[in-house]
Amino acid sequence: QVRLVESGGGLVQAGGSRRLSCTASGSFFSMYTMAWYRQAPGKQRELVAAITSGGSTDYVDTVKGRFTISRDNAKTTLYLQMSSLRPEDTAVYYCNAKWRRSLADVRNYWGQGTQVTVSS
Image (cartoon, rainbow, N blue to C red; front, side, top):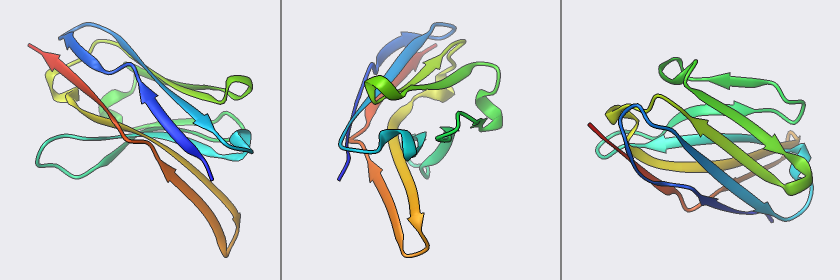
């Protein structure tokens, strides 16, 4: 079992920066692919950025060059550094941990979310 707790959300002006953190409790953090998702009002949850256990990263096109995902396995913490924020980045941001141990054993956990509001 993995428990994920996000922090760092809040109100920020357009063009500003914010860093989100997601602290994980439980074992085998380094084995998980970690990701940030977001959900804006009236919209579906979307994948924002992901980082594999090996450190490979990927981003949705709308945040490339502005957001950076990283992880500290020693601290069992995931980060999302957000820069040049836009009002359309306003959403609840969720941390996700996923580990496919075998075909029949997929571990998938979510945090409770943290609100990021970007004012224009």
